[in-house]
Image (cartoon, rainbow, N blue to C red):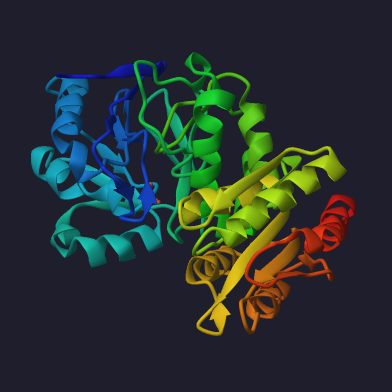
Length: 398
Ligand code: FEO
């Protein structure tokens, strides 16, 4: 069934949602699905911006045919070449053989790698600031390299103030009945998913995000159309401010997160006691996570949210408990910075995980690892109360 919605003058949303996919990029859990947004502009010339994931191809092609109503498709603008947006290029080109592809030099390098069969399709190679007129709609191309792929660009429609922002300002989560974020409660329904999406997908490239935010600040943007999740047409500054914080690794609030690994529950029990003591001494909200139960993408997002993180790990195979080690790998790979960490270790005969964790955390840029490590020998006991108190005080005061 066709599902097309109006974004702005002559501008339509023609995407769709997938609630079946379990893992985005075969990696990130999607408890609430994901949307793949594509847009059409119907002017003297017709254009679409990106295509969609193959999972929604039937819906997508139906929507596209509906909006064109028999007109030819003049341009397919490729803001992003990741397959969740480019998978329909060949199909669209076969259905609308008069189209011209629009992208930058890097776009077409990737196009040739993914789809060498497209070599014969006419193309326009655009550069920063270049424009394309569709009639009354004039499009300007804004390069956004490494947000989060090298070929990414934004397209700005000066006649409507619509910014087509590729993956930027996107979020996990299917779109329900409405395509606009002002139809939802952003804080309750999308903020957590948007943060998890940003931190894990784009988070490594904060410098590049800041660079494109500066360029976008010069544009009279009225609407932001991302490739995933609802469209922003009101209170844009709310989400832009989140992007400023996320891209500079500025904590959003003064909460504290405790992440522990535990084989048999002893480190878990210690984590609960430590968290309670930190909450008591700091007066801050403290969240506790079992690294084996909570997906690393959620833990990464929580590290993005807060300024202070406590990591508690058993010693395992004379090293770090593997799920904690995997999380540390993620934090390093995503270039986490500007955080304060405290470390607790457990070991029944030779606790070493703490020292190894400190080494890894110390390698993160502009991060502080508090000096007072808490060491647990198998389990916390009443005799450890003073050590727990001192550790919690250190975290509260940091
Ligand atoms: Fe939604 Fe980078 O693809």
